[in-house]
Length: 307
Image (cartoon, rainbow, N blue to C red):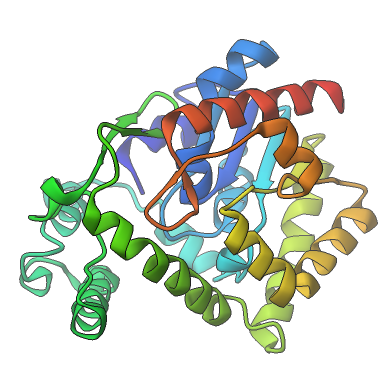
């Protein structure tokens, strides 16, 4: 868990009127400052990388937060609920200096033999590194990370607005040849990973739907307005989702109808036309700064108009 999320969860910073519960799609794509400027309400990204929206929504319940609105992202890539034990492991207090440093080391040393530095709970970092090496052997292309010796090959720069937990990604120069060559490979990898992440016929998927009903119902019982939101990803990825995961979105719509929640699919042609062209980086799932600002203003207007 990012250290700067602690004051929000502990109630020391806030309260916030609008909370976005999600993963990296929200963290990069939603600018709470744009939301606050238009909606006239304070906003915060309760989002993190490689977690599900249900994980974050459950933290709202666990810590007794009471925003007016919770916007929960829905997507097949993060459809499985991993259980309360995993959710609680995200918020173990960083009481020791070593515990505070380990996530930083694991992130910065991802490409420099991470198994020498990362403790067991950071084994996914090692796995990503190994997968990247195998990908390079197969395709001669390497996924470009934030912290990597290949940084000069990247056309974007990153910064983090910790006050709102919004990661800002700017295009500082035209796409490099390396990035252009890797673009199609990245899109194909996203599709392949999605098939593994959302196994529609398994017991784990049904368990996740039941968990979603329970968590969303509890948020609603607290008098919170719950909005389920599908992000407008790269059109190629959205078309793949429509072709292979329509059952997932039907299940989400059924949950929304049963609980009388709002569900907004921002990937439809109507919303895309209103949003205009959106610019992504790397894998077609994360918005660049100007697109994120435009998307955030659009979401703020939706929240106002649909009240």
